[in-house]
Image (tube, rainbow, N blue to C red):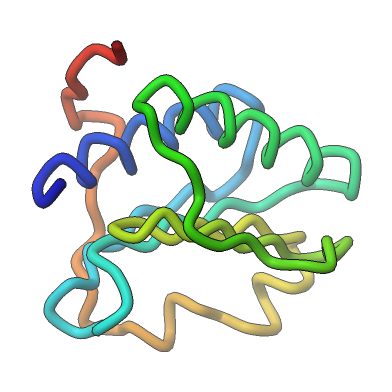
Length: 123
């Protein structure tokens, strides 16, 4: 999918923000990570909000005919990971996001302004 993952990641970021996720951050990590091209991080305010964000992410991905390659199991109440190959999504509570500080693992990652990113229409 190549560059297409950028558009899908931006669409997922918008979907999470629309569902009231906090501190939605999209990082371009392809030059520094062998695992993925993009890492999307979003903060949930509670366990029910975490569930709602994961459901919204699933709906957004489905619009682009994407299914997860892997999903964290068992379902944690503080951190969910969904791997789509070219984009890995981390949905976390504020406490877990602060504790694990994933952004600090990739200090050279370029932040993508997902609000400005034009996405192709879902089919």
